[in-house]
Length: 367
Image (cartoon, rainbow, N blue to C red):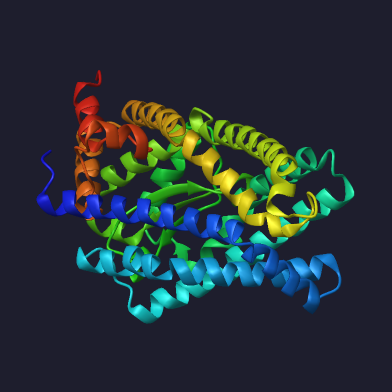
């Protein structure tokens, strides 16, 4: 498959904007530290609220306003202008703004809850705070994976039971063969916002369900839909979600351990009053950002390995490999995918093997 100049330019621009956003966020955090603005915001918060949890909320509001205001122009270019320029978005500006506000409210509430817990443990158990906080955060990740399909996703998208009993039963049978129980197959109204197509197996336990974008259902035949879902079920069969949660837990414990070491080492240098001084939040975030940057390439390499396993499972589970190949080709077209990225780009940034490699593997897969 030969990438069009349009697809290459789209992904090149996305990468440039993504790196620019990353660098801008890091610079803002560094400025907040070096200029002592973070300490100034803490002092303002403490004048407005006496109790530490309330003062932290005020500080987080100020911190969030600074971060969001500085990053908003790039968010607009990346999330709205670029997608419209390449004909991938159906969102009007008002809808995009509405989604941004929802994201700020939901993300802000979750962040505030997590940080209140984190700084409370710092105040109460300064020696063990990082172990306690990491354990709480890991539990929260599991809870969120369970509740997201029923509490968070519906805030941003509409879902309804799939109105195709033949395809529904076919996908449920595919799920049963994979050894997983799903609580329904749902049509995901993605077309209200995007021209892209997708499908997923989401949730845990009693919230696990199959979601199929209406853009996918419109363009894909039943064999191709089955091939796409068989790939998603391959992740379940190989326990990739469990592995992902284990790795997330490991990274969380490592991250909090490094934060504890850095805060203990540099708090005095930046004028903080100790571990539980929430003016250190920019430094805390910078440590997490640095760790995520270090882990980016190895995590993506592992992810590509898991994607190849899921592809192999899909090819063993369906009757005709041509359905898998045509589904990949249609996804490439609808999502303006970069099917032949440069090797170094794929190594660092891509969580999936290139579509060219996936299709080549499917053609060579034993019958």
